Amino acid sequence: MARLPRLIIPSQAHYILLIGNEGAPLFRDRLDFERMFNFIYEQAVREDVLVHAYTLLSSQVHMMVTPKNDEGLSKMMQGLGRSYVRYFNNRYDRAGTLWGGRYKSSVVQSGEWLRKCLIYMDYLPQRSSAHQAPGDYEWSSHLHYIGRRNDVFLTAHEDVWNLGNTPFAREEQYELMIRKGLSSNELLHIEQTLKGGWILGDDTFIEHLQRSTHRRVAKAKPGRPSKALSAPSRGMLTG
Image (cartoon, rainbow, N blue to C red):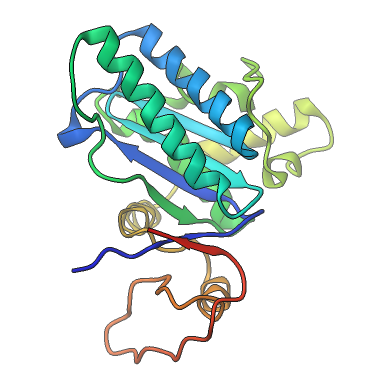
């Protein structure tokens, strides 16, 4: 089955997932995590992509980003992948790729769905082999948003900025939002959507985007006839 091209929409948030080849570790010690941070920052600035949130697991990189133009996200991820592989291979005297295929990208609707994705991202360490609660895990943006660390390369999405009128209020509301958590159905939906590279949003948002592209943006529902697709009017399709 042919793979779907990515849908990239400038000024819209995208959930990015990069996985190690066959689950192989991407980070062996603190220096590896720190170098990944540096590469993310360098490439994001170079390609004019805003980084809102992240979680780095032993074999996965999760990010919430907003590209400002059609090509910035693809160029950022190409540069990030090449830079980190070069560093990792040189340090550990190895050859070959680290990645288990191309990175996955899902457009995320602002508001409720973006906040759900932030909750999902912050709880990844607890649900993974790290088994650490959000406030105990160092390699995510959670500590930044609850005021315990300052990650200078992060840009708060408006959905976080609007949580309160002061930094303290925003930090308090962010922590309450994370504590609320997600239902098992919400977790499953986000996981399956990310895996397929579909859109994370409500039906109205999905239908609006579907009208703007030939690319299918959501998993087909059983028994539901496909709609005629119009010519793309916004966003960029990449292979």
